[in-house]
Image (cartoon, rainbow over all chains, first blue to last red):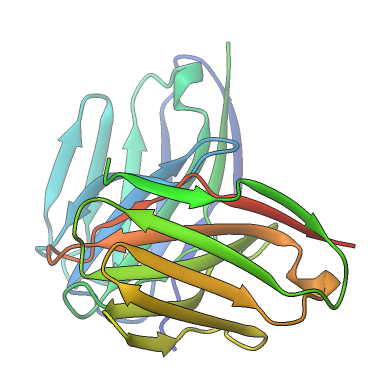
Length: 111
Length: 112
């Protein structure tokens, strides 16, 4: 069974601060996704990374895939209250097969 | 947005009754999934489908069955609901690109 561990589990910060959340595994993945989920809604895809060492930027969010494709990080610069939510990473080894989800990081950004 | 709807959005039922949740998609995606989400457990895969009439079990399939008679519909059935099945249920779909999944809005099920 492939496991994805996310840390920290909870993070509460002030508006304007920077933060990094991590997604780690002992398994290699062919692709890894990050999702954000707001209360009462389903997760929404933010990004997919597929190449070891890959870095993708989405406005203030920077996603990195580890060189060995076993881990990933999400860095948010100058966090805003609108960034509040549950951040989930998911990895898979086959195209459009099953994905393994981490338990998520709950981020709260206080104004 | 993959055009995914779930029905009902909320349901309260009693222990021992059958319950069916419906997921409908308009994107012609091949893959469909049912997850449950509980505090402290993240998203756990119940069953998934890789085509019409083709389904397989996920990690928490006991007590659940599924059916997919059309590409656009994926049904999740609890044959005899138990209180441990109180949860939020999410349907998701995927095309063929890198396992990217698109989620429905969820169904909150309470079993009394």
